[in-house]
Image (tube, rainbow, N blue to C red; front, side, top):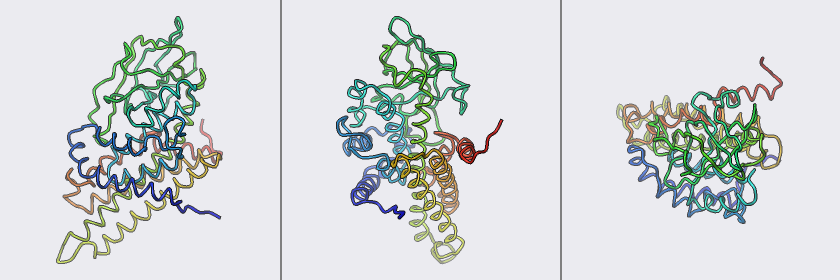
Amino acid sequence: MIDFTLTEEQRELRASVERFARQEVAPVIGDLYERGEFPYQIVAKMGEMGLFGLPFPEEYGGMGGDYFALCLALEELARVDSSVAITLEAAVSLGAMPIYRFGTEEQKRRWLPQLCSGERLAAFGLTEPGGGSDVPGGMRTTARLEDGHWVINGSKAFITNSGTDITAFTTVAALTGEREISTILVPNGTPGFTVGRKYSKVGWAASDTRELSFADVRVPQENLVGERGRGYAQFLQILDEGRIAIAALSVGLAQGCVDECLRYVRQRQAFGRAIGEYQAIQFKIADMEARTHTARLAYYAAAAKMLAGEPFKKEAAIAKLTASNAAMDNAREATQIFGGYGFMNEFPVGRFYRDAKILEIGEGTSEVQRMLIARSLGLSSH
């Protein structure tokens, strides 16, 4: 029997995050977004709710839930705002998860409790200015062992949560030998580690994204995360999981577009009638809802396979591709339905439109997802 019905506990989690997003995030996020300010107070409240610890065991300060619980929270947050949602997604999936999956027991006990509480955030430094999707071929950051320390040189680009006042560290992917990539934990404030200014971004304006540079940065040898030479393979696993989370976030944005349009078309009058009475508008919203529903099923199915311990790479790619397409399409249609008001930043759909595009790029572009799906079908390219 196939059953995607949520348990009572999952429904309660979803309802509590929905309430939080509506009551705590919605009233303030527009102003923060316009000023490009990081939502510290919102992050603190999410920490108090236990959202940063959702998929981690209680022994490390977590909530003892699973990755699907995180996805449900991300969907509800993104229905209201994606800057807040991506802050949570990156903090858990890219910041804390590599330590939980691959770190030593000492690393877990030192770092995870403060990450699970939301008191501190962490980042993952993979992408480089000239690398893009070609991570192995484009990597230039190096780390060499010298007197019991890693000495790191290079730079990273587009790194989320790397420069906030509460960022604890960045896990950096670096070449530790010829065609050998390893990951090394570098605490913020380490001499030679420079966190650049915030990017001026099209969307996600209230999230923290920066360029990082490393000039003879020295950290202890024991800051290696996971096995030497297994850094890229480890991160591919993290990315597969993260694609399900990004799909959930995308579904939230797509659903938020439906929510806003339903409110608007019942109030907005044109030619003597509410515009929601016109079939052209009804069909647009029906298509938006259908896209959202399909994308939600895709990420539910991918999450189910992951939690069952089955291979899920193809399903994660399908979910990410389907959901990011739905988010982009719904944001475009919502902006059209709102007309001139949709082009105003004071309306959420304008913010949604700005936020949607990155979902087709981050954590693996749509082209990469198609490549992964094609490979899973036995197709190869040379």
